[in-house]
Length: 213
View 1 (cartoon, rainbow, N blue to C red):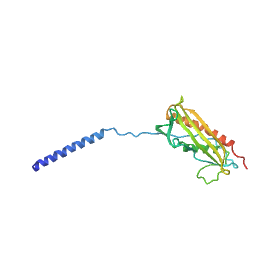
View 2 (view 1 turned 120 degrees about the vertical axis):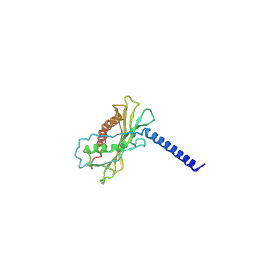
View 3 (view 1 turned 90 degrees about the vertical axis):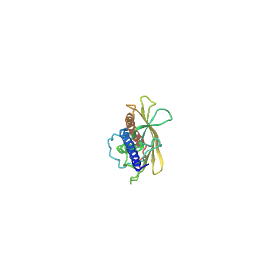
View 4 (view 1 turned 135 degrees about the vertical axis):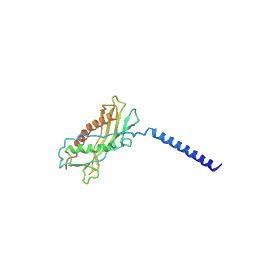
């Protein structure tokens, strides 16, 4: 093969590669672009209660972050459609894990009662006399009911830190019908259920406070 023939062959090969590359680029440019999946995030917004002045002679109360099983200690929004099964909405989330969202509401509610010298969280330099331990047992939207409802179950224990004894213990429940069978409807119902439960927690603990020395 002469040099001229070799040059012509190389030229045609290069031209063919350019055509293929051009076609590939054109195909890429017309493919639909991936659309980011939007995620809705919800929180627990407790209405600020009317504040009562702190009791100077009241105990200092430490409120620990609520505990929860792994399936509830997540920002994923849980729901139930049948017994013994828990599922999660694909595009809806809590702004944080429910136990973390509950902590500010607990602190505000107990502070507003006016029965404690101070209400603190872990990390405070204050020396508490009592500790409030809670465990979240249920926090999900239930589609087995009609209309769907939101269920909250919470175990509470009030501990005397001097004696290391549990002085009060009880499980609380709240069930609130959802205004719509949707994640947003569930979030609305969760807020209503939590707001209804908080005064019950405060009243129960107040009734079981140890007598002042």
